[in-house]
Image 1 (cartoon, rainbow, N blue to C red):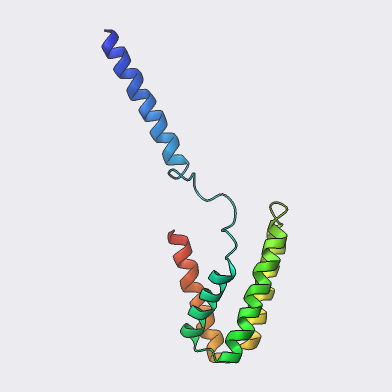
Image 2 (cartoon, helix red, strand yellow):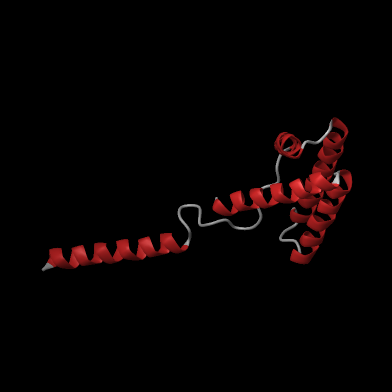
Length: 126
């Protein structure tokens, strides 16, 4: 009888642990907050990838690299003191996208929009 009670307790503990684990989204507990700010090396890689994807010329690539660097510097500043206001961050993102689009041709703007959509779908799959 004692064995059955012990087995029942172990099974209950496993069931509770498994349920808790599943609700937290695995070992990491799911993503808490925004993704980490990319390093300057990662920003350069992103812009290089973008340049290839939408056929930026050298001047455009240099200008967009400066925009990306300034954008992530501002994001870091706003997120360093805690959770920023959602509307403020959305406005920051929209301003950034407008600045990038100002550097691009009409065709590149379409490609940039498709590039962003493709990359946002990749992030959602993580």
